[in-house]
Image 1 (cartoon, rainbow, N blue to C red):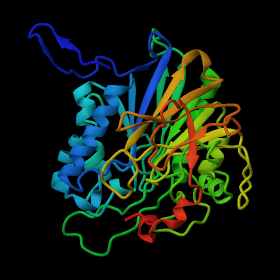
Image 2: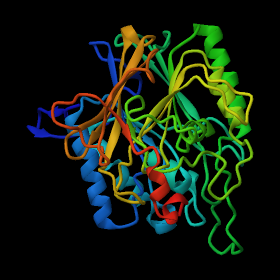
Image 3: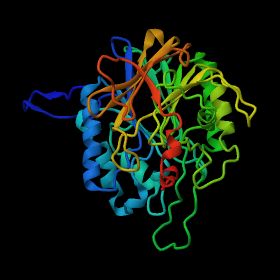
Image 4: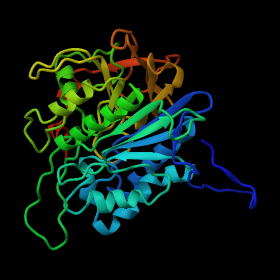
Length: 402
């Protein structure tokens, strides 16, 4: 997406989008770039490097829309008075390029000294380019629960959407405490709340009643338990599941909590959503693989329906992890949404990693394995994953969300 030219001054200037409606291009494509685990506010130099990664990816891909999928800032490392500054740093490459974006918030976006509503949501949504919303209210719901329709190129906003993008707040971290409150910090549940799931199923049902089944994607920061169970069975195959498998999955309901099926209702809702192509999460900085959920979870009465679950890629220089930084790309074609979507990781060194098609045979199709850094080998257009047990050798400190 090139900057627009101000012909009166003959200078290149960036203006907010004239239309907030999301549309497929005239060629029938819609390209989403996902920036994951940015962790701004830890260090100025790290922030600069993270900005460079985002700007570089934006320059290399023909992107129509950006998703900031959790942990935009490291709440533990900033102060309430500085939160607006750091949110502005996060979105500066998007503003510079005139891109529309939408966010989910992660466990680091809510802390004792950081209010996700006042310090994140209100700071972010004052920008015209931000399409982030908040549709579910209540103390347990979180903030970023909403959906965005995507239309054909020339369709009216009242027409049937071609695609639905769902966004969920998987929460985590700690509740904000106003200055002077004192007392111990209070853990914030690290899963998508039942009230949000109820809103999701009710809203999706109304959309289906009005328009029929519409293809959709879902974005949430902390992965669902199904990803851990798939990994624990050693199913992440270097040639069938593209990407890096570098650490144990830390799903919803873990971290500061003991897992007790907290995300089962959410997983059931996903499985009952006709047309849902894939769900995208982050949180685990050393993972960027995908899998097709068509098996049965041992501990739950849930059997996959063939939907795909994917990690993004650690984009920011904040937080743990030593993989080459990058961002997941999702390319959708209006004419072939039902047949599958393309996805790959664009890395900061310019290479492409794990370029695959999430179609009916994904999980069976062979791909060449990628290196530990995720760097594309010369002459290879699509790869798989490596190191299914590599996470066992990571220091224990990296297995916990600090």
